[in-house]
Image (tube, rainbow, N blue to C red; front, side, top):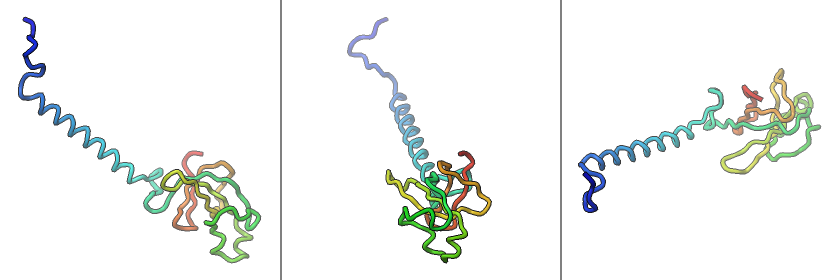
Length: 135
């Protein structure tokens, strides 16, 4: 009727197998979760591995009026005439870790952009700036 002190708490050969299966399932779930983080794709169009990062517009201005605020300045790669005609954005983004970086990139014609807006930028190319689906 009552268990004695010398009786085993878990009886039967199946309890060890059940614990092993549960531990294996948990380890598999954790591994799949970590792998999913490696394949980050923003809104199905901007792949982290291809250089896309989400950033926030800090300042907007035409040509040299924006000022030199970043060592990653896409205005360095174009002629002075092109710089004067083009609207540029200073975009802050986070790299691998906690370091905040800035990049000055050309705003594509017809793309509305304002200070504080979230945008995608490609850190591997000066031609990459895209609007996000949300602000």
